[in-house]
Length: 382
Ligand SMILES: [Zn+2]
View 1 (cartoon, rainbow, N blue to C red):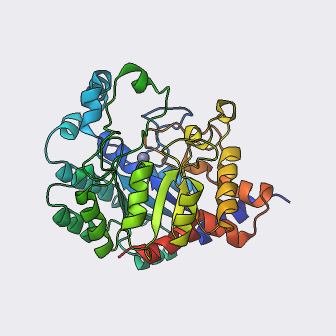
View 2 (view 1 turned 135 degrees about the horizontal axis):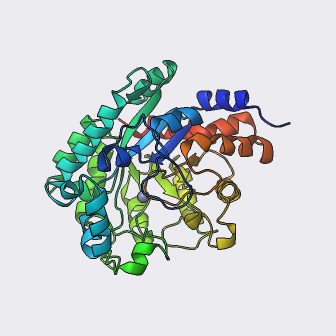
């Protein structure tokens, strides 16, 4: 029997369907877009698509979005003249990216996102704790949770800035991004063969040591004090190991948009021991919807669902449960999503796969789609 669209819609409502890593704010801030307007969502790498605007989220039955706020790294445009020139022409806020206090800029992005949420307060709302999410969901609206991707935005007084983020409701911070940031050293986060790699010599500082600095440790301690969740995505393996050693073992750790080494042996992806580490902490792994990270076999790249399934089954095989699998699409993060699930409106295809092809129990499906994410928030967020 195949699952009806009514069943899928009900499961999405009840789970609630949660994306633990998506970037609607990129389109709102970089391009000054109204998120109630859907542009287009073609397949392939296309920075101008809109995959997680509010219309796509509603159509897909998404209930909770961990909305990643990200200030593009200035070094990227300095390293890559062509990219800088393209951004100068296409991005209205290019000069704001390149100048001024990065932390102030991050708060601007947050303000822009909150303004979008207030356009239709009857349909979208910012949640600042788990009780908020439950209330917003009961009202039938989409709940948004602020997260920050890349701690390069923190100023010299990290404790003060982290306090500000906690007060604004930020639930999680991804410690690093493309460039070594004086806190943690990243793994190379840009796929081989991508045009900017062919055009530009990018010096990410991947050889920097130590992998986790004293300042990075201070950030982790303060985040624990403030009840914010650490996201190890983008950290290199040594930095991730240092984070596991540093963060209190009772706290959940998340890898929000990632694949597994089993299918792409790359420093970006998780080793089986790390999957078990995240399990021990009752954390979660958001599977990225980007073929490059899900499989090193390019022949598989046209269809995302089989790779997403294999990755889920691998995590299940390592942990013996579905309790640590989450969805972390990275939609609207300038990625190249799979052709069969190219925006949030198509997430029902994942649910159909879990029910019909994988024959999972409905309770497990709901855990994967949102229950695990809610558990992690309950355990790790203020
Ligand atoms: Zn990322």
